[in-house]
Length: 362
Image (cartoon, rainbow, N blue to C red; front, side, top):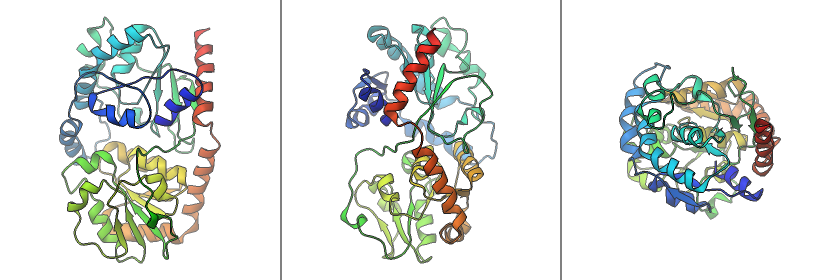
């Protein structure tokens, strides 16, 4: 969402980014203005237990409740108070922010949902007790709105879920944002053998569970497959890796995934939306080893395009070999990247959003 926020700024709009205090450094580090709302919920502690439980189940009918509703409950009062004071004309939010649609309804302004990729709301509906509970009733609202007023959609149509409703969509090019990072000199050099990236997302890297953070085991599986492996994870996870051979490089500084992928022929990751879409934008074929419901969903949607496969740890080396040697994987990945590049850039999408909102108000 950072590129879109900057697209709005570039189009001349005022932007404030509201979030829990723990997010403020990341927000200001992106050059945007942060507004602290609520108290830090302890994301890792809240999500770790639920992630572990859901990883053990193949049940796809997971509802948005528990930790997600708790995060919303902790910030909604401050968000409504700030919005009443600052008086925004529109509220843009991510797919899992339940506080934003409530604040938008209280102020009578449009709520715009900015997707991260393929829209997983069909498989992760909001639990009824959350949609009609105290989270909304304390503001005099009967239930959480079922749909936003408009959707900002960065996902190529071949990977997106058809929308059953009539919610207008503003397409946008997915522009990767990976935070502050370095471009080390070794990454400039052309590799002597195929370079494969292994990454495992931000939240999974924080969870102390070897069944969820499988990057060390993937790196080990690929070490003898004749490729160069670049492990793009938080450097503080290094102790969780054993001795690494020369063809496996674990960076000692934070790497920007989109920079790493510019020289990679394939990527193996957990299936988070950020990793999936960054690889898609780079035109890199993907092996996804999903553990939880949204990751399985992303893997399924990507597989429909032919640009990647849902894999498993036991055969990951063979799956990477197929991506490197069978041209149709690269061709499908290139087609997705080209479609993404043809979508409106964030500044153009910001103008398109304003135009669509004007039409809604008529």
